[in-house]
Amino acid sequence: LFVEQPLAEGQDVAVSGGAAHYLIGVMRLKVDAPVVLFDDQTGEYLAYVASAGKRDLTLHVAQRLRPREAVPDVWLCQALVKKDRFDWIAEKACELGAARFVPLLTARCVVDKVKEDRLRAHMIEAAEQCERTALPEIAPLAKLDALLREWPAERALYFCDERGGVPFGSAIKAGPAALLIGPEGGFTDAENSAIRAHPAAVAVSLGPRILRADTAAVAALSVWMAAQGD
Ligand code: SAM
Image (cartoon, rainbow, N blue to C red; front, side):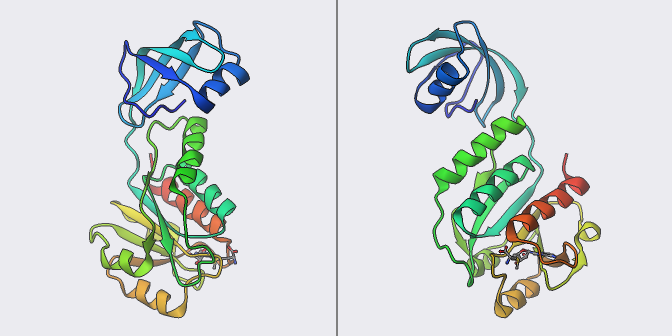
């Protein structure tokens, strides 16, 4: 279970709202039941239910189980796609271990807004499911040209391009990385040229088929994790 506040052994944590409903109403936890907590700051802890009411409960934090994990240094720069698919990509980015999720606005995006709290909620659920102790950072929505302009020189930008590129598996080098995936309609010719001209960019292929944006994101992260992640 994720809690917003930094945790420490010996502390009591008050839980209310949806999390309390889940623990009391769905899991039917009683006093002394164990609960695993993480805070995205100090790590993962074993806690016990100290007291439970109808709508809230108190957990006593007994012992730290793991420090916050070191996250593989890969970002997913993902052009906005329709809401449900974008949520799904955020969830999978968390499961697959991305350090940072960068929502991008490009010429062919059919959506122009992103709800960060909604993305975060999906990532929290995914982290709880896959026992991740660190959430991916969510970057503010960026325009493609600004992203390229402000790009950190030391970070390789693997541009996933359905029009062709080096097979991704053989292009991966050690060091900080980012994966760039377009929207449903892909990148325009002008965007494609601007990305390819960027000094940090390496155009890569995920195979000869045109993948859906959500499939491409998961495929690219999986290939990178298989090569570099731990
Ligand atoms: N129309 C489909 C959809 O609704 O998602 C396909 C969209 S595809 C153009 C979206 C993005 O996925 C592309 O901009 C590219 O970044 C990535 N992509 C898709 N197939 C790819 C491939 N074979 N190799 C590399 N990247 C790919």
